[in-house]
Length: 264
Image (cartoon, rainbow, N blue to C red; front, side):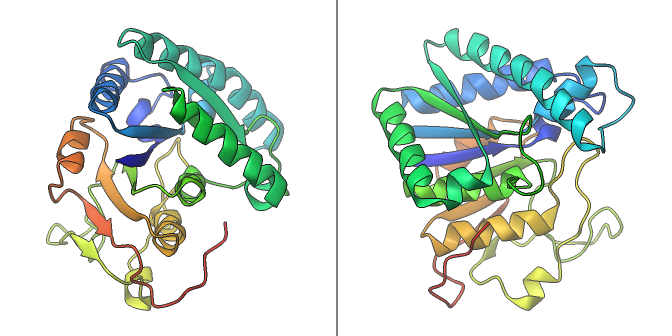
């Protein structure tokens, strides 16, 4: 299986911005095992700004662009150092790719990205992708890694996109306010009713809420890729997903009733 796994900031880090070492170690071990089984994996990793904020001892996630970019520059180093060290323990080589919206939207740059990514997979490397937050401004920013991961999945014709976050899936009501809220296991069409269920709040250190995840689902399913939202608290959930078990909320490809591919 060719799969894109998006790892949210809440999965990688504590609320302090510091790395959740136990969870990240388990994530890398699980991904290494799945790769050993013959799966082609691409990781889209959040966390650079959040981790940079923690390492710089900032009181909260920065809101101004220069501090965001500074935090990203610091955090990206720690993030990739951690991935390189942990995946090396399981004899896997990681590759870093940093993207802006122009790299996806401009045909020539998109083709170069596709070629590089496919060659990395052929060489057995594990690509780790993030938005180039240290240089991206409003004009060239993708905005969130949910949309980025969906664009990557569409670029390479992935079989599956998995969004690991701090939520179990899409609910019929806000589970934080309504204990009786029920999770929706399968979405075959992103209807106005489904869109109305999206909230706007992400975690304190992250940027993505359910709205961005539904946008990602539109991009992925329009390109023929199923998408699953699952809780990343225990990365071993990936085993269940790859074994075809019903985890989280699955958005089924081709169920949106139009042939128009969504753009970022």
